[in-house]
Amino acid sequence: MSQAPELILASTSRYRRALLERLRLPFRCVAPEVEEVQLAGESVESMSARLARAKALAVAARHPGALVIGSDQAASLAGRALGKPGERDRAIEQLARCSGQRVIFHTAVCLIGPGKREAGAMDTTVVRFRRLERGEIERYVDAESPLDCAGSFKCEGLGISLFEGVDSEDPTALVGLPLIALCRLLREAGIALP
Image (cartoon, rainbow, N blue to C red; front, top):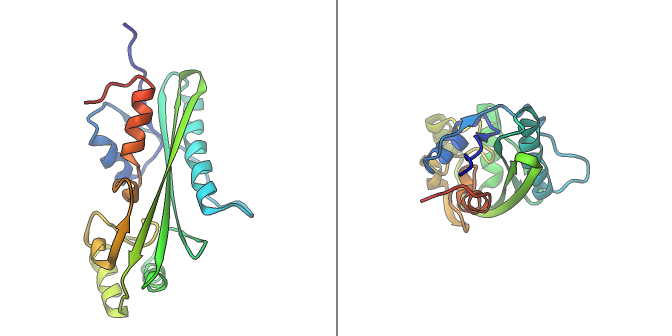
């Protein structure tokens, strides 16, 4: 019986790490060192898929015997990408633009195994924001400091209070790693899951 390859998450995201820990598989995290930029004329969905693959490929090149998971999430409002705000004022401005709107989150996952065997999946989640007052946006940002989150919220925390609804096939995708799709990809790669 052959031993399963080492599992590596090509990410330094604490959110993705916490999600992958749910599967109770041994893994380690390796920084992919991939520049996360949108190319000219590239759709938000295409960008997410490209970056998930690029992250997995970058780590797989350094660890050729491993099974590498790359993931990327990109949010769009009216077809334009919403990045991670990085600072309080940008988070407030971003949430003000999202007020009363539908924001689409594209969360891609790519699995690359030994021999460059590759598989991927994409989850699309639509978040419907309720109308938000400036004061409640400021209170939310100050309470949860979602500065490292696309869309400026943490749905697994207080951010859920900003929504009217969420349309998704996989609630973990909105946090940053679509576990339902990843479990399917892992099973197809021969990894035993409960």
